Length: 632
Ligand code: K7E
Ligand code: CUA
Image (cartoon, rainbow, N blue to C red):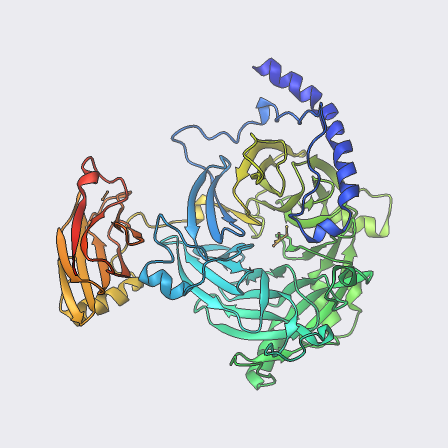
């Protein structure tokens, strides 16, 4: 086996060269246009005789996590159009959990339970791109995960204690909420970018006058999830970032032209990086130097047009995409997308630029050439940056200080290595890279196309989330991870920072609503098993469970009744979830140990209907059921 690995290693280079030639052809074909639409067909069928590159040799195989062993990191993945968040173990890349967020989930009843229905309304879909955790003092505080909904201009929060969504907020005056980033000095604001410019107010005016469209940079309180203020700018905003001190937030702008067509958006040579001065904006909000837009009461600082105390526009090469802050907090790196460079901005110079002492462009300290189509950058703990290169399908490792030296001395080469990834990489992130505790162990390359890497499963291929060992001087690809459509981003978090509950805490604030109902009805959630008629057409059914039984074996309602089932799982044992499924009524939800959930439906057909527990909880799990008798 070792010998075979060795042989494969030697053929690596040849195979890679073959693949490179093929990719260059396809890159030329797709041109710039495909960049704006990551998911267009790329004529991606490899030619005959094409040999995929071999896996890394066994010596780099330390990513293996043996059966029964635990991973070192939690990976939080967005789920794209699936509308969810996923948790993977890193480095094993085993998928551990899916957290429904903006989607509906049959397994847990998310979107159907009273609590989740209240959050989602009748909305069916979402598009999660960016997941980030709450911070304290420059690293993760282990409390919350935030995720955007690009499709519906929402921000959701997952509580890490329960790994469930507890809040969803609508963002006013916005479409295409894309980049988000929480402040890093503490759990402060979560900054959210509108990618799409719209008329402000969007009520039918300025319909076809794109020059009057504008976009919002929105501050949401990460603790209360209230929308605190917005800053209106003329250009669109793509990715977001924050500094480590609570002074600035950043947004890349790929359409400084204010165009509404692809050609128009790519016309100018330079686009910009918006830098928002948060203390100055807060002052304006406090002093009431704000406007209201449309129906929303959120104060808006109008910062369109020229640079001001609120917003600085740093010129960067055209159509930037990602912006990422290095772990020292000194540098912001904006990616070129249509330029082969990334732009390094010295954050410590921004104060002088805001004060007018230097030009915004003077804050740029490096512009290394990293490859065709740079998108996102992450970092290790040794001063290196890793940029995902979409068209070239590589991760480029480069050294930040060398790039700065090269800016004044062209003989310096900051590029350390280019590693082939498969194929067309979007986001990349490294372990703890978005904190001051970046540790330079593992890198994830979220590849948009898998093409030939997996068994053919039909037209929709999996994506390919690749694991790269970055602990040494050279990067090594060690694992291919197929994923269902379509994670955009991930963060990789040390496991000692994440401590979810194994059994629900009955004192949790989320029980307030159920306790209130029980009080109103004079019952106790932990001991009551009975139906209570609340009105002519409304009943509440209180029920408890211990494996393998519901303690209410039957209840009787009238045809047409609204039925609210409030189920409490009394089992106090890790991993012992029950659920409640009402046959032929589209009712199915989970109740974890010591948890309470409720679900309301209409008993619209006379007859006998069995309810049962859908989670395999006991040898007599199949017997865990009861009857709803519906009188005609
Ligand atoms: Cu796909 Cu972060 Cu939405 Cu880049 S984004 S790739
Ligand atoms: Cu309870 Cu199956």
